[in-house]
Length: 77
Image (cartoon, rainbow, N blue to C red; front, side):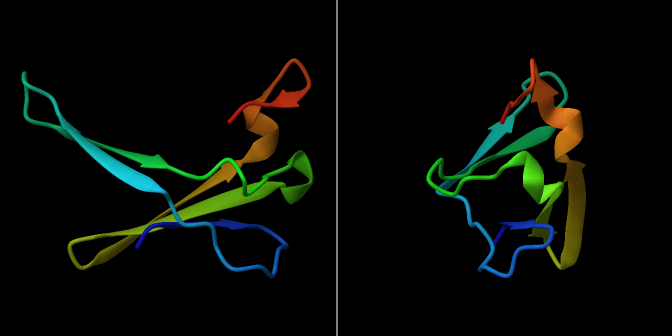
């Protein structure tokens, strides 16, 4: 199951409410969209969030720096 973990937090990871798959008609590439609940508030104080998921039998991780996700002084998620 995909999950988001915030740096420095001890709470349980945030799991998506829905996962959507889209296939590109031109080249067959598949896009995966993870929809996370808005109730789990992520703040700039969290610094980083890490998305962890599995593709077949391989774990995939990506860390996002929240300072890079700011727009006009507000975290844009």
